[in-house]
Length: 168
Image (cartoon, rainbow, N blue to C red; front, top):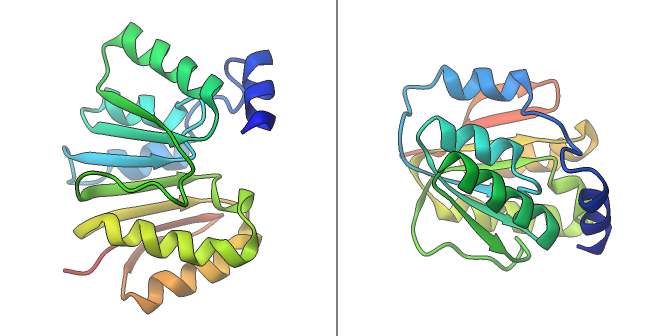
């Protein structure tokens, strides 16, 4: 996305570090290995944190600049991150996924595309897989409803974060 290419070119740490809420949630899980799909990964703040904890990460974004910066950081720290330049609405991984992370992604989509994209992402998850959504509070109600409809169990639902587990 040209908008973010320009932003990332000017500031190599535009969104800063992974939020404390995010790091705490993943640090407190029994889930210690597996593949995580980071949708809207940008410069990779979440992907880098997760890969450093031992997860294999697939980072998807439309910004080439952000992904190039992520590739450089991943190589510097020898972290297992695969970057994919793609529109998340059409991207399909080659495997089932243990967790999907969407940190500040859904508000970028038109309202009528959000649930459809979330439904696609839910389909990539293994049973008992995790879905983490952190976003503007205004976009969460329709996403929450879609997760509830598919019987996801909520581990957290407050302060702009939906963290849920796919049913077995």
